[in-house]
Length: 311
Image (tube, rainbow, N blue to C red; front, side):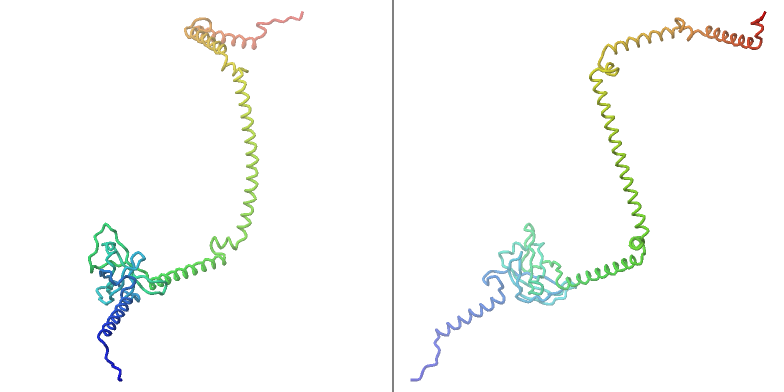
């Protein structure tokens, strides 16, 4: 009996369903990224001057978590900084973090790995961006910038090495102060002599310091002894400080001296007359003059006043 080759409709429906599911799974694996194909996604776009190898379907990260994927990359050439337009989607559950001050930049997984878009969350107190809005671009160095910085660093290093070589060459030839320090023995000799002189000076200063310290200790000891004698009422100073009788005697003597000086000022007594009476001063002065004249006359004519006879 000949076998029938007709396919039943039920089997065809199962095959079509399986094929549809496989197509959906393949599409989701290439376009869904690490997010579910059933999550609702919001589309945004950003502009770059260079895609740096980014491809459609690349992941979109937010704070290190994959939240979407790249939908399209196209040339727009709006200006120097906006040559590439990249459209991408993120899951709706994190859209509240994409506000007016949010930003995007291109990232690399490893040094030469796959590219991705990194979204920097904005401030939650800022208004949320609407679907289809442009997110500001954050400049990212990338490999070209890193290589440029490396070239600049190498240039700076080369210039530094050349300058060091020039300096060391001059020093080797004895040019400049540093060169003379390395090549001239005179300065070394002078420094050695200076160090020796400084050593002697420091030793003398130490000896003098010891003498000064000993003198200060001796003075301090003497002061301690004097203070002890004063505290024990010994000596004149101790009695002056602690004995009220000495103070009373000095006070009484001062009063008597003051009384005598008062009488002298009033011209009382001999001392007062000597100090205040001009007539007595003139008489004493005349007397002194006459005595001087008499002495002079005696020296000139001694026979007038003295007569000598042998027999």
